[in-house]
Image (tube, rainbow, N blue to C red; front, side, top):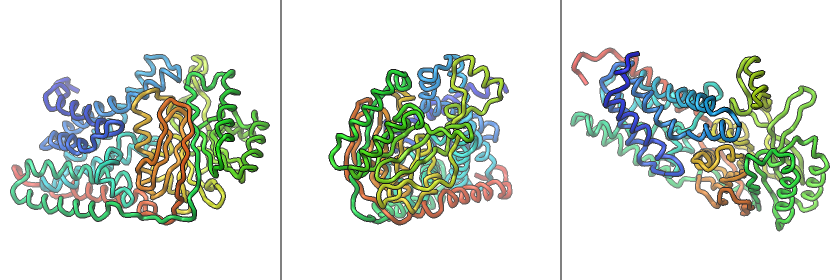
Length: 499
């Protein structure tokens, strides 16, 4: 590929627009900038060949993911101990793989043959969202910086209970197309755009503030424990007993509390190695009428494997094994010779085993709980396996892997979207933050400061019922996007010179 294809003003503008895109997400919150920056990308695609549009999409995406997911280097090098050169290569590979989906969107967009306003406002949003959905699924998925997450504080978030995060992404891209049509469309097209914008505004207004679920039973007293054990100390042998004592004392010192949640792998060892500790905790919690959910490793000796698990002790018992694992974090899709090299380099090399897909919800008294561990709350469709039966969402995580970066804020933003999509309160307990109680409408009820030891207490309301998204998942949005793309690409070729 010739160098001049990359070094030109258009690609420079694409790089600037992409680099600014992370500002539309947490912790910056400039949600209004996302459709503006996407409109710039759409303008750069206009009139270009599929090859050039793909290159501009690649440049835009590379700049966006380099700025928005730089924290992967902190995790891989700073905490996993991977050599700097390899950490750079792995982080760059993730950026390019993510950006390739934006490139694919550009390639598809340039092949659409319908009128200008129709391709800007329908086909191109469909291309972007179809590839965004694919990025959140293929090779186990990486849904970071999906456009819809950036709208959690914006008016389009009202569509999340109906269409999910990808539906909000689609509408965000539609707004970008409407902006471009107002600037470049004909007078007739502008009138149609005003009508379409009016329908979008009306629909957003009609959905804003609507509650799709109802209170179910009395409120529940809860406590979320944040131990704030730094990642460089968490697995030290001398830190194990102090960590276990810290969580136990913070929990058993609470006033009457029905449900207590500890973070992911709060107990930094396998359950079979601390059976006495767990039995003591079980008895003390049962005596207090308390249910404790704690993160721990669970060995499966029959199959010679282990799970990243959420163990329930107290009034009742249960266990949830993490189902959606992090590639190159919890499992390593590499040949044996690479795994042997990782072992010699003193790098993690053994896979965590995924839990089965048909696990039952956890319970606290009469309330069913929809559990997720860390990365799993980034995938909205996976929560649906426990709904609408469950009255509360529970997520345990450990964002200490990413230091004092923007990752924890982005992760909280995703968790808020899960509450909004499902119409359920989420209890989110993390090791170093951000521990939070999230209302059913995605608003933060309360939160703990990062990197501080503490307990977040409160009273939350279980809910019943199902939002439209709970009933249909991502199917409607994906089908609409694919249909719009097919119509745009299969349309007869327009005469030369006709917009």
